Amino acid sequence: MTDTAPRDPFVRGPAAPDPAALEREVAAALEEDLGPGGMAADVTAALVPAGRHARASLWLREDAVICGQPWAERVLARLDPNLRIEWAVAEGEACAAETRIARIEGPARALLAGERAALNLLQTLSGTATETARWVARLQDHHARILDTRKTLPGLRHAQKYAVRIGGGHNHRLGLWDAVLIKENHIAACGSIAAAVQQARTLGAGRWVEVETENLDEVDQALEAGADVIMLDELKTGDRAEAVRRIRGRAISEASGGVSADTLLKVAASGVDYISVGALTKHLRAVDLSLRLDDDR
Image (cartoon, rainbow, N blue to C red; front, side, top):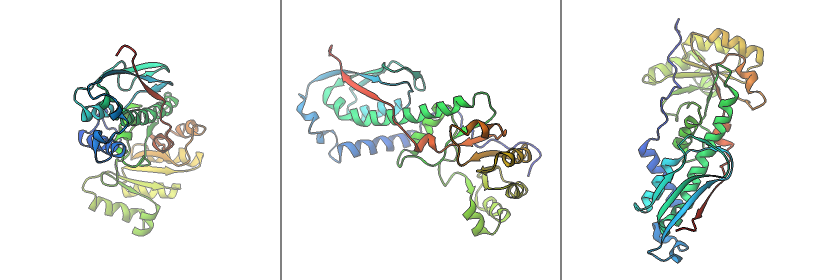
């Protein structure tokens, strides 16, 4: 327990993809689409003459925040270093429907072989960033900030959390390894909140410790135990505001569970520091993109 506000564990700094994780995600996308044979396995692209050069335009068909340019670039570069992509918009830019967001030029076979993997990544990450930006905009007049969760698409945890940052949100823990989140079952297994937090401090090697609470008594226990973050899991409106009052200056407060577009502002009105929203990454609708070969190729 401390008399001053603790360091904020959720502020991650500038959004930047991790090169190793990006490489793994791109490799998996290409392996899934092309199989072990690589580009040579694309029996449809093989119909195109080997020396054919092509130019194509990438069109956005709906309003969206563009995200995933490094992934699309890497897909094309892995297939042929002679493929060049020229972006007409910036990463993280909010664009209107029917915007040409890029032009691609180079060997036609490689362009066609990489089209789906590149667009899948780009439209998925743009969907995540766009949804995040919508939630963030709703809170523009409130103290609370939007957090993601671990409810991500398998194999795209790093990419989606990057997209959340591009959309203006903040990342919760990346996985089970970088922070301690003590939930109901952990508390039951350890015997008490105090015992669980003590064990976390002993074994956590300096990692921040969060405790999930379901009532005001548990909030008090988490404060006494010295938790860095206290999650308020589906507390009633009055209890949530009281919990925030007790927590303020002693820990970071996070509201979670049952948050929807209809309830978001009511939750934010409690003064909570963060609101975690699984919908950013799990209730995902990819944005509509299309790639068309240009007539002037």
